[in-house]
Length: 285
Image (cartoon, rainbow, N blue to C red; front, side):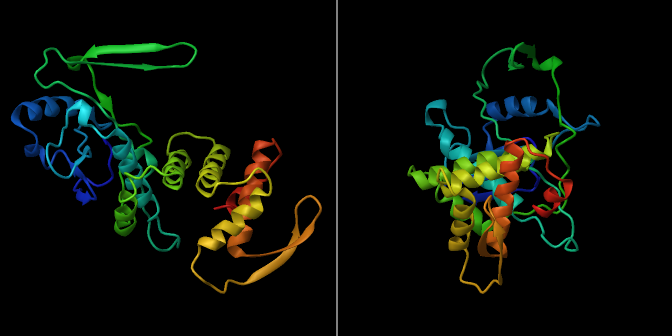
């Protein structure tokens, strides 16, 4: 994870550990360490200084760099997603509570097989859609500059209790768990810091909710409101009644229920190409 928001991280959660490479290179054997130090030196900040936010995801016990056949790709991917949401969900809601900066781009995880004893290492990657471009080169001629859209984090912290709980689910293969982690894939898009059109963020987050809460084919807004309220602790939130839907039926919801209905209605208007006033996006925050 080349842009992890905490360059001091050294945290065990479940079977996994996330740790900063620059602070703990001794965890690799001498041959692997030499190889990785050379490889990670390709990652530089915009001013040419080394990128020292490189974090390693590994199993908590044993070899931090397992053989390809022993690599638990799905579980590691879920661990990376859990790290992402447990940082993003700690953003302060009170505008006077301080300012934090990190995005889902700080949690990009890459799986790269390597052979530390190999000669003349190189890198090859492709990009493009209709026109495919393949870039191939030796390390001596490559540098990976930190994208400008990946911020230098300020005050970014992790919800530790949530992380432990999510990592405890990483090895489970049932449908609810699959829905949970698949919803994080869409949440990643919603919190991305690259130049993504803001309507697309609404659709991405709405899709995450659809996956997580198993929306039906019809009555989606009502289902959304009901399921979120079912998941809340018992409360006495005030309710209001107003006209809702194409027929203007009188509907009663609390503030949470109305937010769900309004947010899904915003998503639907975007998808169907309706004109959406800018104020509607502000009220959806």
